[in-house]
Length: 217
Image (cartoon, rainbow, N blue to C red; front, side, top):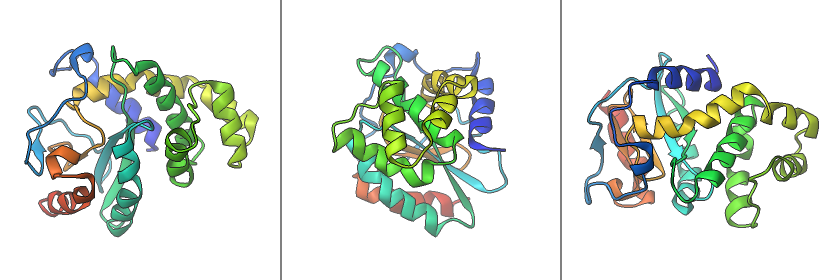
């Protein structure tokens, strides 16, 4: 099952089952200070494959998400035999950055549909945060993708596809469903545990915490 289909399955499970705060109230907050990881109040399975999944909630506009990207890729490479890394773009419905986050979610799922996330995820972060490209419109995103070797017509077709649209629109529900209040946040062990920069004591410590959580399985 590909990543977009797994996202669709999660969205189907999320419908009518949100037990956390309302989406408008789910704004970035501060998890329990000093804790290395948090247990979800109402864990629900995230993984849909035999290998364990690590699920990262991120935002292209978040500096901490950018700082984690390369260490997380290296961590996933070390665990490639037993862990699958999957990403979900963060969208806080009702938040001040909702429109930008929704556009970034559509960009992410377009790259995923085209099989280009592994190659271009870091480039997307750098385009937004270091090169001043917002990438919030189809033309902007298509121009950027073309410069990185993606056929413009193929990008536009994926960007406009119902599959990508459903995944992007549903990202906010997943953020609430898994009680995410800070990005980046990474869920492991079927959604039973999570960690984040505040919980781990810094972005640089997150891979170490993830090692411990995976070892508990």
